[in-house]
Length: 304
Length: 162
Image 1 (cartoon, one colour):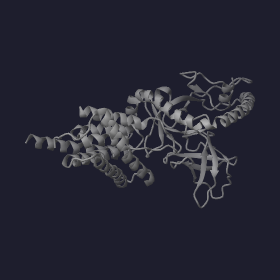
Image 2: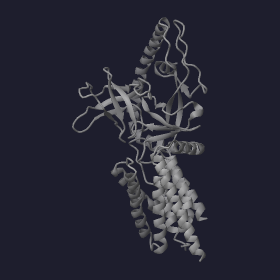
Image 3: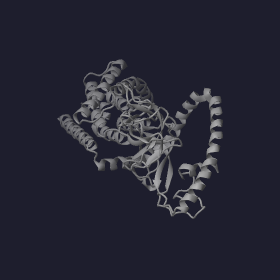
Image 4: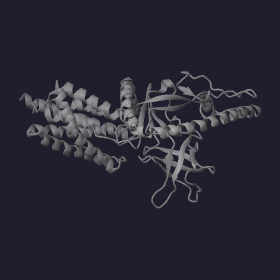
């Protein structure tokens, strides 16, 4: 008798949790903002644990990576030496351009665009499944990271913040099938939409029919839509559109070694500098290793 | 004791799934570790894997990953319940039978997900990715079950409350 009652209670409970799961799924499907808040609150709650786990798991991944790349060590060293020499030259050029720009802006009383600073974040978890290409990072609203903020590594754009909690945020990668980025290609600034498709080389959609682009052309964000700022380096054209499929892009960012990334935040618009002065970076809330200017100024910082 | 085992192994499975080991499109999605862990307990200690424990574990798994929240929890509840019923009515006589049952249910799990996606017009991942995950989940059950057996000393199904 008691067993029968217990079984009935269990069946009712099972029906209840099944119904609850389905309701939650429908809420997710309808993009309910409260569910997103619950998701980020959950991530915030376990973020400290995830940070502790991220260290050892990254170390394991790096160990495998190092073993694999050990054989290429000598050629990699040689390549890096050449790269350093090339970059030294660019630092000098950037320094000269920055000085020249500062003088010209001051002479023309240009009001500079809002200053961009970046906060460096550590990847503490990945999406862990076939449904999305995203990562969780250990910075959030308290660090000035808001929804929609672009994320990049040293080489190029990685994605954007698709959900931010107090101390964690989720970054949707460019390779995710739901990712769409308005881009401009080459010197002609041919417009297209970069669309992820779960591969290493996302596609270029909505290209003009007679658009003149060539393989290897540089691709940067066009700024259309207002989510991404103009001019963020994305990659290069890998293949042109053909009967086999749309044009594809070789992304500049290194997704395979994604341990740290930089997320953009916007500070107040600075005043126009005096003639001859450099436009220097305003100190951020956590000045130091976690923030830095972009563009040539960053190169100057790196060179100093 | 079984409840505690389910909770601990479930949490370990969730954190192991989202650990940033392989990131990006070239990374392998891997098996559904939570399904493997809960499958082990459902096959051997059906009373230790009640829906009220599976629901929060499944939901936490869905919330921490960037997938469809609730869908995998639903599929997980159905599959684990089926496994508990089968294990209770005709206990597996050997590990091979237990493994085979789990492998079939790993495919059923993905089938339920696809059905939910079709009903709600949700874009689903490529079928090759789904097949890969189902295969990996089925294959990895054996080593996971052996490790859990060694650590928890749960060797065979105990009498249940059904």
